[in-house]
Image (cartoon, rainbow, N blue to C red; front, side, top):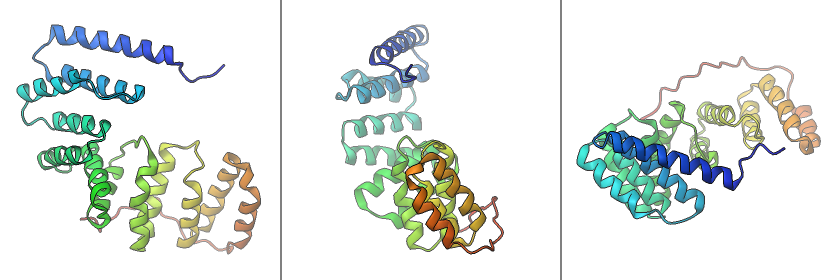
Length: 239
């Protein structure tokens, strides 16, 4: 039997969550968290249904700002609404306010700030270090492909230690996916960590047997002696 939830099950789960949120807001109308939770549900529901954001979600933002004018979660919530509605410029302007208020204290805001501004400007030199800081905090990235521009930036800077760290973290987030293993294996080999390259190549073979021939050729090309691999890398060159 499939472990994936059916559309009916997802719809039912949303319905129950909306009822719970509405009940909480009715009991605690002046607590901002209830309105934030309802806003989140409305946004993710619209995203799932591939529909425009409802006006109710935007109305909840007005309530949130009335209750907590400088609460960064309100600006982040509004930015995500704009993003879901493909209003990238408005989303970037809004998340910039949240970033100014929170600085480095909220990784989710760091991440959205970096990704949105890089998408609009293409300025990896400014925004890749900010995005990498968010990754270091341990955020879970919904679409990890969105982190590849950060790895590409550090490849251009020949900072393979950070590249390695990024790929390791992405694989930790999605251990059953073979998507990033080839990149990590190549980075290990470039850094001289041949034992780690071999171990991860065998993991890739298990996850993607179709690559066995290429893996054999790669393993045959590796020197025997491996450099010492340090797992406690802590970068010091971030802005």
